[in-house]
Length: 63
Image (tube, rainbow, N blue to C red):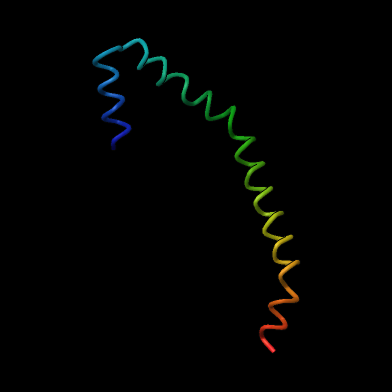
């Protein structure tokens, strides 16, 4: 909601910039999408490595 209010304020103060931001937002989102997917993949790999490294300690803790 705050983003919408800020955009409305920007539209009142400088409408060409607000319209440019409105039109460029989907393009920027599509360009950044591969980096988000890469971040999710890296997070998954690091979680897997962490689980593999900590597995012996969890087994010993359960005994």
